[in-house]
Image (cartoon, rainbow, N blue to C red; front, side, top):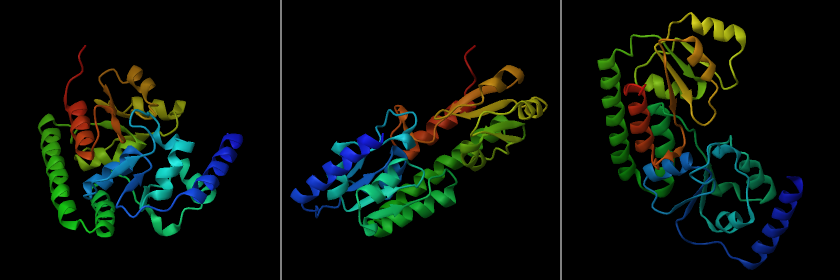
Length: 251
């Protein structure tokens, strides 16, 4: 890993000597999640570093082919938990003014704040507000569906990284597990909840054992990062997750 990164730094130095910054309004996003925020904000020219099909996008490491895009772009959007961020900041010496850190969450207030932060930089506030209305309506529809199923009143155990999504739909987590695998005492405590639903995180699932002890609980895997299951946008992920929650398992 160290050797690869050293080679990457050399490549970066050689590249910077032969290329001038772009004057276009392009954006490079670290992952599909930060890219989806940029698109919600009204960005039209967004490229992603971590491939959409990656299950663990935050673990993506920079490759030589990424250097050109990072050097030429006007804005790099990141969340802070990505492995590549330290490489970008320290190894590539990207100017701080090109870096924009946002918070990625499915809590609507936090989502709106991050999207509008990007939109203000781009001058696309009106487009962003219109797009956010669609997201707000999706959550309204989702809360109605959850209430109709009675899941807002029943015990549900939720993966730590899916808590913001669950709460936005009106689900009140009885217990929260992860991101590490539950310890024996946690499993015992969760077995006593009689939860009807186990909401795990598809990007790092650790709740499989709960499916064995909660006999009346349905085990569902939810997304955070768009990409898997033909998702590309925040709206796609919201629709997919809601369908996962409310649709009964096929036995």
